[in-house]
Length: 302
Image 1 (tube, rainbow, N blue to C red):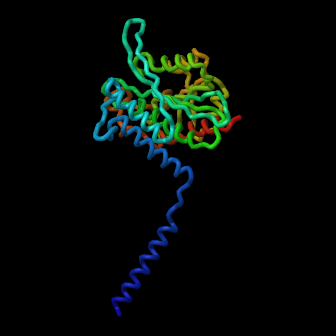
Image 2: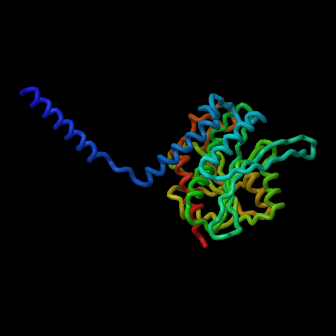
């Protein structure tokens, strides 16, 4: 009898503790849920691109600089796009520069079509190659992670009043050959480019203010980012080579980075220490959320 009473009291106490714990546990907000989703996806992308975890089977890569490493990277990126229901395409090239140097590479891209027949394209891009012996976490696996997640969410939208294109460039380190060849393709094929949006050096936030730096080619684009951003945006005054290159073709551009102006940027960029473990994934998720908010606003705009 005593045993039965003890057992009954034990279960009552257990039930009360369970109910109490369930009631006092704070409900996850939509913002927290989205942050967790972004971080989960981007940890996988950055982890594989930097050799922190296997990129294929048991195979890991040390950097994304050699032809063999870049081939593995291209396969990973194309398969990752397929997994989110986007058809990947390859812009392969084999060219010589004026000095006779040969460059063979592959840009990976995918189109996310409009739902209203628009011929305008908004391009979301980042380079995937690195300098030799650098895992290239913040330069620029994080940029790839931003573009990938934003493309995934855009593909899920029921209404897109513009076409979108996600692009992963090769040969950044070699005078931006990959960017040059892709832009040539856009020109040759007559794409109507609305604007180009690229992220680089993203993922380091030492002062934890989640601020970003931005260079926009026109006030309208700048205003849109500021409207959608809950964090400080500092105006970048020096154009990056990629931005200048696209602008030379008459394309409007936006470049997003960490706070380079305020020296709140990774000290490990272009080094062997630019590793997965140095990335602030909450900061990366914050920036990603801003970029997606801007793209979603563009998708809805008539």
